[in-house]
Length: 305
Image 1 (spheres, rainbow, N blue to C red):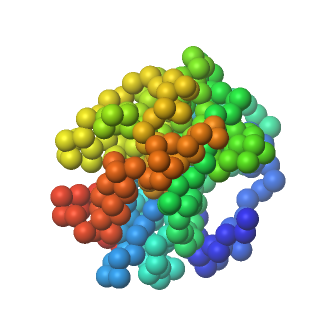
Image 2: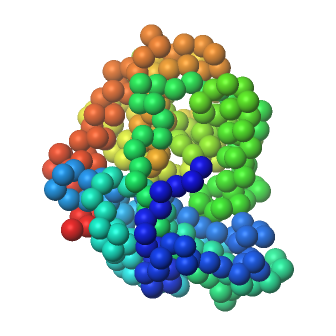
């Protein structure tokens, strides 16, 4: 899928034309997946472009590399300024997706990556709307398991880690569903390839613990905070595969997916086959927050202009 990328990208402190952003074929990340990335959304509300939870994204951006001793050679402030700066440089006045990433550069065929390995940082943007149908999608549990912390750190947003997500998505598409659900090494629910998962049973909201190898998602954290503020009963706990199909509601959360209802799981209708009341409440709250219509959460937004 060819993306309508912005005219300029930020590449190691310089704004350059997108077509001029090139790297050597000996770039380590091309061979071994040694790249770290974030997915960030900015929302245009008719008055300003507001980046959602930018500080949290940048903190995780740095932390992901630390698991692998891969250095981000810029301060958090420099990265924050670069992210807002690339939006300004491209004069963006529509909702967009922002992809900052850093990667081990021209380092040869060498598995001994240290903090001294050369890294490059780049940031690009493109217009972005809904990833999934907000009226609800189908999902199914796939045969592939989410990798565990015994193999590689699941909290690192590392390029190579997402091969697990790619192969799960391929199976889901072959099975004719919109999204995959992965189980953890114990057979409990972990997450979707690029989203966290929540269920509702008897008015109570639940999501898998991080011990399931689920990513500590920033949207996941936002939903937990919103649920607590709305006095919705919430618990992080183990969720079995069979519990999915008897849930009253299921929804996914993620920067790209936002809040996406699942209305069919393993070919079985969830609830009445439509987004449930708690799901719809969360979707509305989230929309109001990112569009800067809720002053209680305005601190989650960073204005570009």
